[in-house]
Each structure stands twice: as structure tokens, then as C-alpha cells.
Length: 413
Image 1 (tube, rainbow, N blue to C red):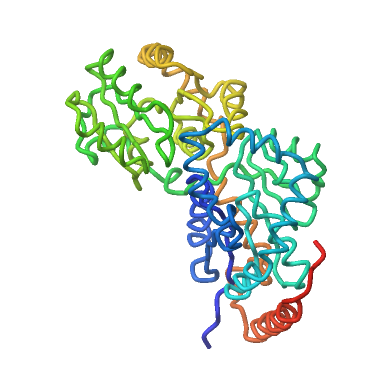
Image 2: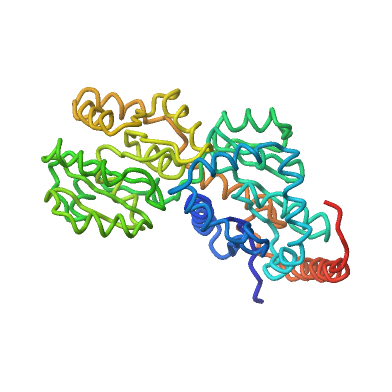
């Protein structure tokens, strides 16, 4: 008998690389833990809405985060209130409910995992309006500075990465019994990477005996990355630099075209960041939670350069308060910090402090919780039988009828 796997839908938005990366990390952990018991889909739900402005959120974020950060921060502040985001979400939902309902009916998930705050209320409203038969679990992908849109009583469960996030959600009204602390969803390939520094450098074709600094600035390559690289090359001609420009193709071409120090290596958007980190002694990064937590999971000292957007500012405090690295907002201070970390005693002490700094198995922990919320209770030994599958299809048929009946109504949110 062929049994259809349970479906888990990740509701994301490609505003930056972090939300999709978190979904990919959890999906990989799910596949490792369950095999064929689940399938995973991903939908950019803001794009699905078709709502003017909202449907282009990913392009808008890339533009604002690199060219008009002041406007991005202003938008964050203006919308950062539970009541305000309730009203704004309702306006979007009233216009986009049919598109959202069609997308959900097409994928027919049994669990929807929300990894973007602006998507959350739209999913909850659709489930309530059409009585859709799935559970909603939020995975918070910010560490400290959380937008108010992460908080909503309509979820079944909210998974948070830090004590700071847990406390803020609680103060904003999220029920304690709705929340669990799991750690941040770093892709399992980082925790399973067993390369030594020398082995990773051999894999990458690098010099094995040089102090190596990984320089990255997020998926869109924001910040003054080019100037930083030039200064590090000038001051440390003997150091090995691994520079990741992300999706910033112009910066990649610019750095590649210049006459480089022979120990500098320029990369664009990469899929082997775990190997680059394994090869490195120090990671220089902005305060984005994804790359920051990947480096800490790999137990690499971090030098944080800047916060791109209000939501990243708390991450700097997180690093400093937990003594996980240094904050260096200027190129001069970055250069000094690299020099400090070349001291063997200081470096060893910093690495020792990182050993138990953050949980390494956040993605695996989240995957385990998701499996428990499937109708089968997460059992990997008991096959799903045909009757539950028939019941699931029956529930979705009833939901489809409700979607059609509500097509011309104005739903309550």
C-alpha cells in the first residue's frame, strides 16, 4: 500500500536570506530524522498575497537594507506594535485572502511552520476563516530585538531561540505555555562538519599554516565590505582572507578585478559556508542571526561589524553580554581586534569560552517537536494507514468548500 507522507509547509518571505535558510535547516533536520515520513514545501507567502508593495517585499528589503537603511528602520519602528500590526495585517488579508487560501489548499499541509513574522497573522486568519485542518508553529528567527508581529495568540506553539526572545514575547502577551526555547535553527551540516582546520584548508586549496580570517556580510553583501578587505590586506599581508560577497555581484566583480594579495580569496554566494568556517580562525560578520549563529555553533570567535536594520541591534548586545566575541563598528577597530586574536593565549581562552556558549542542535530540536505535532504523533515506527489519510482528505475537501463559499464574503479577522 502506498501511503502519502505528511506535509509540512514552511511559510517564509525572502526578505534577506535568513528566513529561507532557517526553513532549509529545519527541513534538512526533518528529512534526516524521519526519512520519507514527511515532505516539506516552502512558500513565500508575502509574494503569494499579490498585495501591492507586499508582494515585492524581498526586492524592497534588498534595496532598503543596502541603500536606504534609515527608511527601513523607520518602517520597523512605525509598525512595531501589536495593535498596529493587527490592523495592517487585516488590511492585507482582506485583499489577499483568496490567494492565501488557494495556496494553502494546493499544498494541504498538516503543519504550517511560520519563519517570518509578517506572514504569521495571514496564516492564522486563513485558518480561522476557512476552518483549515492544520497546526501553526512559529519559529522565531531573531535573537533579541523582535518585531511585535512575532507575537500572536492564534498559534499552537512558538519556538524561540534565546532567553531574551522568550522574555520579550512573554511581556508582549504570548502565553508561557505556548512557547519553548529550542536554540537557533542552524543547518545540521554545520554541527556535523568534522573538518579540522588543516583538512578544510586542503579541501579549499588554501595554505594550511596561515592565520585565516573569514569576512562575510550577509546574503546581499551589505556594508563596507570592500574597504574592509583592502585595509586588512594592507595591514596583514601575511594573513589569509576568505571574502564572501553573497549576492552582491558588483562587489564580487570589483574585488576580483583588483590586484589582490595572493593570500586573499574572493567568493560570491556560497553553499559550503561550513567548510569556509572550518578553515577559518576568526569570522568577521554583520549582526545577522544566521551567519552569527553558524559561526558560534562552529565555535569560531566572531568580530561583529554592524547591525543592518533595527532587528539586528540586539544581536550585538547578545554577543557582548554573553562574551561570545567583539563589536567593532569601524575598520580601525576591526584591524585591532584581528591583531588581538592572533595572540595564542587570548585566542585559546576565547575558543574555550565558546564551547558551551549556544546550543548546537537547534534545528534537530525543532524537527523533533514538529514530528510530535503530526497526526501520527511523530512515530517513525508506525506507518500511516489509509483511514487517517482518508480523514485528512475529507477535512481538506470540506475546507475547499468553505473557501469557495467565502470567496465573495468579507471575513472577520
